Picture: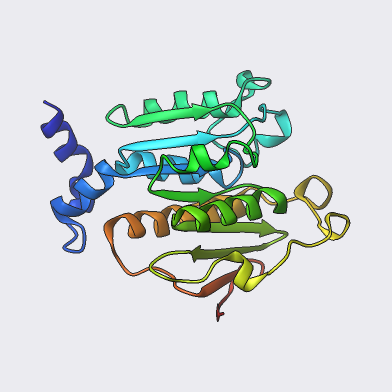
Length: 236
């Protein structure tokens, strides 16, 4: 029965000659860790799950707050105060009961990063602070894990793939994190809810291509300015 369910669920993407049954099997066998279940993490998780990624890990220590709801579309108002990781797991399992989801209701730290990330094939970083981004990057480099990176600010988003098939990593582009005092955040500067939806979806798209061995970004940083729809790709 599960074979029939899988065929019916995924046939619109397996019809693509670049994917086929072999690509779908790669998705089914893949283990992906998503860092953060917030504005970027929500669309990432939705699309990885519905595409059939077989095992998804979610790490987030935060709780759902009402000001999250305009952009963190896995959650509803009656879930305010609940764990993001655990709630996201429950919702994602409803989206696709054919996959396995593991929730880590904890903060990613220097003490647990190696142990957690080592269990997965690829990492997708939807975190919202530089300390976590550099911790994730450095751990992926140490373990040889490819990393899909995205960030948002104002009306602009960024996207890159690091540490894949000999490609460069975050420190090759930005050797050191900025001074925390100089870093704006969405709580002070705001964000339009659709922006993390767009960038998160692009991150999910790039992750699916990574899993299936399709062409992906290499030593390139995508800058997507959505106020005037200016799309730039920089090489580094």
